[in-house]
Image (cartoon, rainbow, N blue to C red; front, side, top):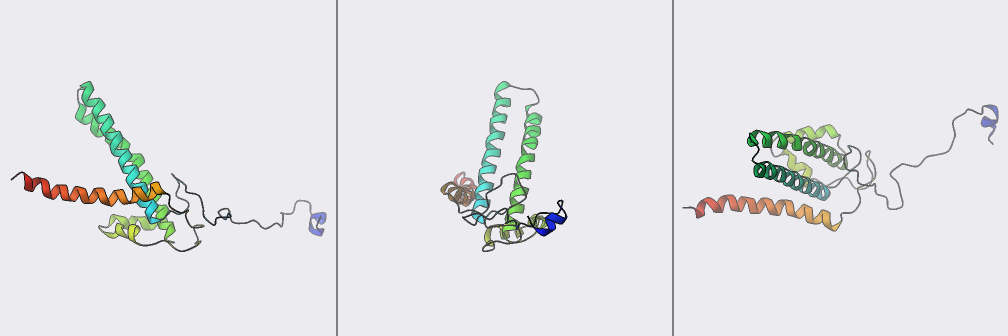
Length: 172
């Protein structure tokens, strides 16, 4: 027992506390649905692809159910359901964008700059800071599913652009 604790038994402990993100690997865990932490650009692209694919799948399934049941006013119902489904998608996008901003050692408020056309490409092409920054330890290494998701997003975009150009040309 230290002399200060002998004098004041209610004194704060004097032990040092390590950073909550530091572990043997030197990386922090991935946190979905959180504005805290960091994610790299490959994981950011993969999460955007997988969340968009899930959003579109849910909208198609619900639209198909409404269409097959012959629900009167189906167009309005599909619009409302799609809007309701878009809310968690947009919240997930903002939280993931904030984590990506943290990886670049920027405040989460800088995500508002992504509303300016073409500025959002910074979140894709600018690498994160090496090592720890003020937002924590670096993100974990990318898994195979993350790498596949990151490559699927631009691949599907390119296929869509080619199809948008080729289909009207083939109809002539």
